[in-house]
Length: 476
Image (cartoon, rainbow, N blue to C red; front, side, top):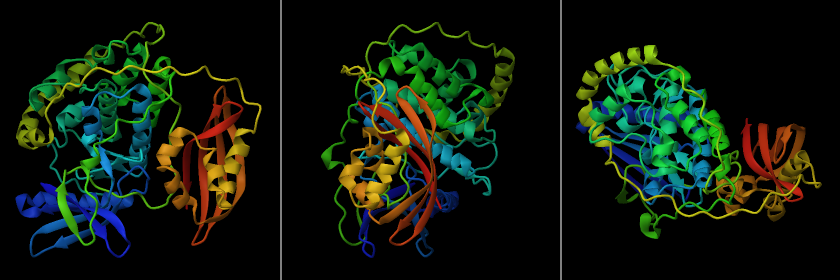
């Protein structure tokens, strides 16, 4: 359907990804490409692959998207090497949840959330890619009503039934990714898309403890809720699901997070000056993002034998509602059969991964810090950067926000133009145990612009002080 090439923007001196599609293969693909360009351009988030331009070559019937290039691999490739420890999984899921919620807040439903559409950069960055089957509130649907489009193993019941879908369908897919990231295997496995549809219609949501016996029951219950049969029973946002999952995984989060399994060094070629090089796998768009407000991370983790968990809450009876959904899916089976060729293409083979690896232990946490307050740490972080004291500011950043920013050099690039910052507000809105949240409102004067920024900064305790753990800031 499309080929992705690594290229260099000679004017700006940056690598880019060129995604080229030959519309003669399917006239509808051209419109999907145009839509991907419009939706991608409408989303401005550090965890969404940016769309820089779209080029139509009418003579050859070729449409090309110019995308941000991500030097790394897909989450599918990471999982292929084995499941991630809970700490590592959360480091991927948290920024991915931010990206999804940002899309939903802007009226965009992705509709094809799966590990192959999540890019993991060598710098630890996480990017949501491929809006080719997404839908926006102001866009006409390219697929006809009643056609299931996406990847069957990650599709919600209402999507498989050919119904119109909303953000809840993406939440369902997000929960299946969380399941797969923690276990190394898909939440639903079968020989064909039709068999998966049958499982969804006739079985309960997958149980995390069946694939990972040591998993806390509370975490399993969270993912079951994320994969609930009825859309209204799922969490309202991806961020809420991650918060609940982190709470459920708490017994396993007692060791420092190890880095994600490293991709092979030969995974991607170096960009050469000019236009294109060897075609890349379809999912490999995007360069190091240009400076912009920084994203998020959160507490630290890794798997060990969990402490005893309280008994699972009794499941609510959903027999009546499930009958309704089963009826819809029965109709959807016929509809889905028409799209089986498409789905079979996007549904990659089912792979079983090796069991989780051994864990490390983490020293006990220290008591409440007597050092600087959370709000003073946040003020210092930005003030030091404005004075070009980047090393001192970087010491106030925890490991999660460091990986989210993309490393020290990326931090200097993002705040390198900052000349001064004034705080209209820096107020502690939550301070409980090891965690704190500071609400800020700032006026940031850069060499080339002035930003008015608002949002929340999450911090975590570290010895006698606080470290910045998550940046949820938006600027205008």
